Image (cartoon, rainbow, N blue to C red; front, side, top):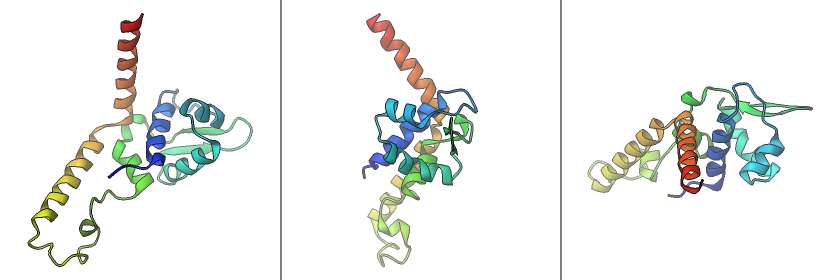
Length: 146
C-alpha cells in the first residue's frame, strides 16, 4: 500500500499551517510556493480536510487557510482518513461478506492485526509532535553545518 501524493501533500500542508500562529490565515500562494504544489492541486487536497474540520478556508482579499483545530488534536490517522477514507488493507476488512473464508483464513487475521497496529501508530502521532520533531531535526542539522 502506498499513500497517494494528495495525502503526502496534505500532511505536509497541515504541518506547515501548524507552524504558524493560531488563527493566522496563510495565503494560498505561500503554501503553494513552500510546499511546491500547484494552486489547483492544493485546492483538491484541502477540500477533504475542510470537510472533516481539520482546516478552515477564508475567501476574498487576504484569504487563505488555517487550522480549524489545535495541532495536538490532529493525528496522522485523521489526515490519512480524510484524504483516503477509512484505513482498510484488504477487501475482506471492508466487507464481511466479501470472502467466505474469513472464519478460518489465517491471512485474514494478519490483515486485521496489521490494519489495527497501523491505525494505532498513525493515531499516536499528532501534528504538534511532527512540528516539534521537525524543529529539533532542523536545529540539529544547523548545528552540524554551522
